Structures are given as structure tokens and as C-alpha cells.
Length: 391
Image (cartoon, rainbow, N blue to C red):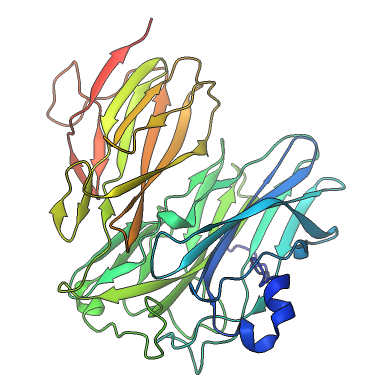
């Protein structure tokens, strides 16, 4: 299916940098994405994530940096949050709202200058204005969350001479199907060598033969070696577009001899509504498993889900224990996120919980009663996981 390509942009360099002059704005944007949702009453909300050079973090323009087709500018609500836990970049998150006048497909737009310089796969200098896309359909009466996506979940670090394996980690709203492309966000001349996105699953891959050729940024912008971009689309059962998010970010090519970013082992848990879930999130740093206390952990929280639940999961940052009483939850897929840091570099990890009211299938080769299926780091395996029913 051919998807319409909306020429839009995500986020803008803000008032504080604008007042400081054009020179102060140059070469700071490293990527971003914005995720739109709409309430039953038509309140459009955008959760924006952007990445910046640590020494030149932009503010989010509160006077309409994100504009909506047929509506105008959005208002920033609440304070922006700056995360400086990774030495390569500062992550900025902010929330914006505007009231929609009626049903329709809305395009979201923002634009500013400039990207960091020295990106290897740009034609000419990369210190240029950036653009990104987002859109959402509102039927005039129902709430809609077409795409759940936290860009931080993508690990930017690429180890030379090794396969890079990742996933965008997006989740579609109830009744919607996600698909993906890797359209170039101008003026990116080409995707990083060997980089592909699975159009059906959002899986990211770079073969070792390609990562071996990756070069460092020559201008001193640490971790800003190759830019990658693409789109996430959400369609209903008829194939109609119900939401779209464009993303752009940077890969950081590293050697095995350097300090590598920690890796959080993602988990997928299949369970029944009413189960009390208990497991431990684990991580790897510099190629070695990390016992509790080795890394600094942060509880990011529940990104969202396809259902509703009155009980919130919990994560103990000291013991890395994840727990959730799923009583009073509705069936669906839920995404919970944590972050690990080695004091210089970071990684996000996800716990994906698939709740159903039917029988949970056992893992291959495991007789009933089955241990819950855990998928981590792209491989099938059984983890230390306890499950008990709550009556």
C-alpha cells in the first residue's frame, strides 16, 4: 500500500536560543519524534521527544512551534524535561495541546535550524534545517491513540564488526495495524550503510560487514556519526491511515575497546488477566552480565497499552524487580519501560505484557503447567519468572 507522505516537522529550537541569535542555534539538533493522541472531545495532545548536543540544548517554543493543519499553533503544557544521563546527548521531552474543530485527518508541523554538523551520510554539511512528520485522524467522537512509541527505546550505539539488531518498539492502538518505512528525511543523502527496517515488524538491522565500515563524526560531535530516518504508519481494517509518526536519530559507531553502552534485556510476557506478575529486569554492560547495583536504574513507567488497568506496575530500581497485579485490567498489550546507565551511557528497556482471558500457550518443548514465555535480546528463552493467579 502506498502511504501519503506528509511534509511536516517535529519540534523547534525555542525562544531562548532564538533570542541568543542565529550563531547560537547552529549544529545542535540530533533527532526527534512527536506522538499525537486525541481525546473523545477532540483535544489533540502531542508528546514530543528530541535529542540535542549537550552544550546547545534547545527550548521548546511555547508560542506555536508545532502547528496543526487547519487549526494553527499548539500550546506547550507543563515544563519540558531535560534528561542528561547520557553524556552523548540531552533528551528533551514536552507535551503540547490544541482543540480540534471537528473530524478529519490532521497534519502536524514544526521546523527549525539546525542539525549537528559532520554527519557522515549527509550530502554536504549537515548543519541544516530539519523536518519531520506526524499526523492523526479523529472521527469526531472517540478517543484515539493510534501509535505508542518512545524513541528512547532505540539503542543508538553501533558496535563495529558486529551485527546491529534492534526494534522501534512501537505499539498500535486497538484494531490498528502498524507498518514501517525508511524514507529519507531531507537532506539525508542515504541511510547508513546496510541499515534496514522491517516494514512489517519495525525490526532494525545492520550486518557486521557494514558496521565495520562506519566512521566517526569528524567535527567533534560525539555519537553523531550516521543519521537514520523513517515513518511508522497505523491503518484500520480497511487500510485507511489513522496515524503516522516520522522519526530521525543518529547512530554512534564504537569499537569493542571503548566503553560501550549498557544493554537492557527486553522482556515479552504472556499472561492472563488477573495474574500477579513478578520478574527481574537484567542488563549487560561492556559484554558482561550486570548483577544488581552495577548499573544505575531509572523507572520510566507505563508507556501505555491497548487496554485499561486500575493497577500500575512497579519497578524497584535497587533490585531491578518488576511486579504487576493485573486484576481489574482489560486484555491487550501493555508497554513498560526502564532505563539503565553506567554513569556515562544509557539504554532503555521494555517489558511488553500481553494480557488475555484465554489459555496462555506454553513455550515450545515445555509441558503444562507452562512457565510464562520470555523473549529477550531477540532470542527465545525461559527466564526466572514466577506467576500466580489472584482469585
